[in-house]
Amino acid sequence: MDSSIMSLSRFMLEEQRKHPLAHGDFTLILEQIAFAAKIISREVNKAGLVNILGSAKTHNVHGETQQKLDLFANERMIRVLNPTGKVCAMASEEIDDAIPVDDKSLEGKYSVVFDPLDGSSNIDVNVSIGTIFGIYRRLDDNNCLHSLLQKGKELVCSGYVIYGSSTMFVYTTGNGVNGFTLDPSVGEFLLSHKNIKIPEYGKIYSINESNYDRWPEGIKEYVKFIRNHPDRQYTARWIGSFVADFHRNLLKGGVFSYPENTKNPQGKLRLLYEANPMAFVVENAGGAATDGKHRILDIQPTSLHERVPLVIGSKYEVELYAEFREKYG
Ligand code: AHG
Ligand code: MN
Ligand code: MN
Image (cartoon, rainbow, N blue to C red; front, side, top):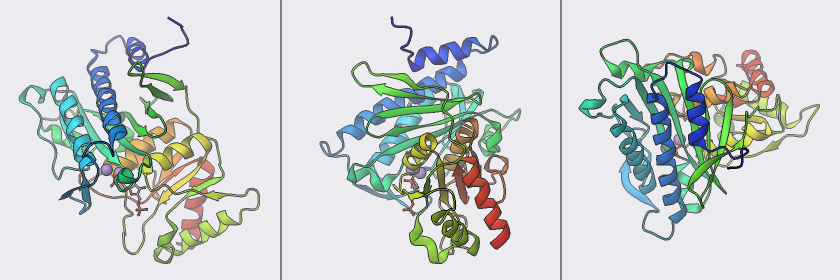
């Protein structure tokens, strides 16, 4: 075998070997998430051919219409994780309460949070969507459900899958970020983006400017400054799928922001399923993530579905944002 070809499975095994005390529980969980990603990817690619597009005519706890693919992806994630017996608690953007696990899983040493399909509004129009996940070590506590409400800085692993022009699996265990591209002909994720580093600053800003009139002054001033930046010509990019906007900015540099506005006082994105896992990725790639004032990974979650204003990406643009908020409010 060509030594330059590294499959995700081999990569994970080699990582596991670096920890002589590891039992393989964590590797199994990650492997199963990659397996679910392949199934979801297959289904996403069939969308339009089979009856899987459109609304499921149900709503999630956030009041958002669920798409059939949201529910499919959610069920796949649960169905791959439950049989491992290693996950004592799970929570999903699509389910109101913590997800019940099998009896044999109650002793599992990890908890998992996920946004099964991010960018739902783009499913029906063939635009990139994704899956986001975070894995925590179980707290030393009888009630495993408490393990779901840990600060992001306690994550042992997080990552995302982007179903785009190709399907990619990007993850970190706190020691660099690596990206794997799915080779559909062999059904394997292969290492394609080794040790990803986000540029210190970029030329892209991603924010939904239709909210402009509802923003606090500091955000208006920040965007005005970026548009007329003395050193660089910035360009705006907004896909409307966080995973896709984030992935592009991670590789090219820049900032993604979904701040608070008068309609959404806590922004739109969810701390557990979106902000924390991506903040852990971006920090491990050399970037930063804040709510404008605090580091995202330091925020203590108080409920499963809470939202948080999010500014994430290259260090320069994220720090600049905090300066503008401090100065103008
Ligand atoms: P989800 O599909 O998981 O509910 O997330 C949608 C999110 C995120 O992906 C995206 O950045 C944002 O909603 C777009 O919001 P707007 O429609 O307000 O631009
Ligand atoms: Mn989402
Ligand atoms: Mn979602």
